[in-house]
Length: 323
Image (cartoon, rainbow, N blue to C red; front, side, top):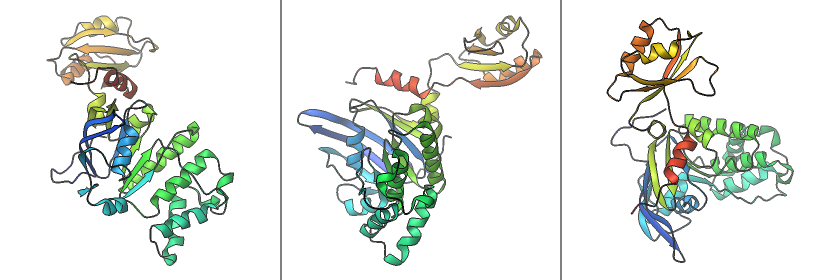
């Protein structure tokens, strides 16, 4: 999932030393991170961490006390109109004109974005197809479920074809099926070349969905970078998961007899065919794998153990504020 980029690529979002206070409370303290184009970037933090403040600053809805934000190389401060043309913002809580139909609602916003009458119908059909709302075109907004309203809101964000989507808790209040369907829509939008910046508390889904992530806590960035780099962070002892097909009773003894393996045990969730291995830090895991194969053990899988996103999140957000 980790991607590489040309060194000359202009970030979709570049935030540098963003600092802001509300009535003496410092919401953001020198927040810096970058989001590369055509990626899906997760923005994670506990309540009150500064997520919404950051989103509003990127959207030009809030002027921060200090710092610089650029969207595709355009300054949020001095080129706000250009920035607004390139972004689509879906807030956590949004209001709808409930007595409008889905089509009327989208047509209103398409006109507000300057789309001509001749092109609006096709654009609306396209975004309704993308969000799987074709059959709801003439339904009143007041009669839609929360999940369907979220889809209409996402369709609204797309009518002017923005390069960058900023989504604040888009899965909030959705049932599991609606969340899964929404995440698949986001994957499709990324395949279409959109850059997606998503704030969410649903960590397990973000781990599967996102290329990169920024974790913020009490106004400070705790981590920002590729998702793989975050989940591969561990202590100095490499840990691997080994799964065998019908392992012998003395499998642990055999594994501990190999050079480079310093500990081996069966995890609690295992049915007896999975093993957690700890390797010496200086040992090449490929050599260990070759040694296991040499024993004649029937290997199903051998992989580096990764942190879960919720574990990484808790590790990073329970530390003290940097000085």
